[in-house]
Image (cartoon, rainbow, N blue to C red; front, side, top):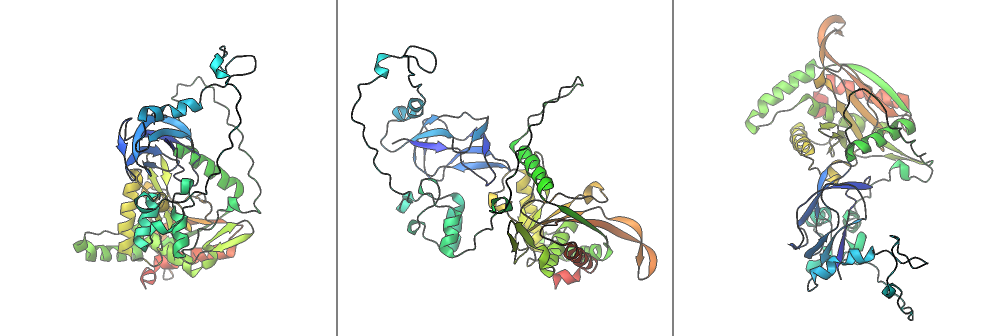
Amino acid sequence: MPIELKMPALSPTMEEGTLAKWLVKEGDTVSAGDLLAEIETDKATMEFEAVDEGTIAKIVVPEGTDGVKVGEVIAVIAGEGEDAGAAAQAPKAAKEPVAKEGGETGAGQPAKEEAAPTPKAEAKPAPQAAPKADTGDRVKASPLARRLAEQKGVDLSSLTGSGPGGRIVKADIDAATGAPKKAAAPAAAPAAAPTPAAAPVAALETEIPHEAIKLSNMRKTIARRLTESKQQIPHIYLTVDIQLDALLKLRSELNESLKGRGLKLSVNDMLIKALAVSLMEVPECNVSFAGDQLLKFQRADISVAVSIPNGLITPIIVGADTKALSAIATEMKDLAGRAKEGKLQPHEYQGGTASISNMGMFGIKAFDAVINPPQAMIMAIGAGEKRPYVVNDSLQIATVMSATGSFDHRAIDGADGAKLMQAFKRLVENPLGMLA
């Protein structure tokens, strides 16, 4: 029986995508794990892998097509021993216009006589068995599930997949190893009020010379999520001025000692560490609002805002509170590089317990960042600049930056937010504390 390839949901927020490029053509033979296409999601351009083997009988959706809905058939694979030509007709047959009453088809043409077959006894459809993962070499599993299973020593053939068609997904691996499930986002909480549909934006008519640029899937998602954040989350902003001289001196000394390893720490690497340690010191801020629950996290996963050509993405430093600065620097360099190439995997940018956004390199003195739900806080970092500053009870010239924390006031009280800002300031001004 022909196998229909459907547009996959490559991220939890994905509703439609762009089929950017086919990596196979009709007539090609593919096996499980082969790359089939590049799909532009709301976050990145990702590769789509085959989970079955066979011959590409028909490419239904051509490359470059925008707005392909999740679940829509994009290609047909003929299984082993099947005629590829016959399999290619399967999607066409499903779309044949049905004859309407009065002897016309949906196109307004007279229906052929053979379109009205002699009534026969209606055959009852055979009951379908519950989807189950294949065994042996035919186990259906997502690429992420395969990697996790290999890392954790899980036998895929012993699991029953909960994904489409019995496909084994990450949740099945987590269930098999007893890993904690991800907390539901606030929008999924039963107590949350339904979000009103956004009013359509009227097309702007203007005589001013201009160029109309079509929004990418990423830009559409950024617009929707940030609008939801400002509409639904009561933001409270707290700002502190922080002296950077001690941190800059320590960074210089550490970089000198790391030369032999080819590593170089940035100021941002050290601020990521400082925020993570601060969140563990003030756990009331390492939380997420989930309707009638408050989720308190037991590690600090820091999402770091990275500007890319099509918008913004936030790769995550997992467990930043326990990682060495050298490890954070190495990981951040890799994540930022792959983010700009659009090659991050979903688990590398989805999640996180808090965010940091640094615009100091652009000379921005201070700004208020928008919270990235379901997180409850984000730290906005301004530029370090020479300013008059009181040091040891005397007015001196020091390198000072402004940091502004945006907090979800449903989950974090102002006093707790102030404690976090105080802890962050103390750690940056006395940076050896974050290394202890």
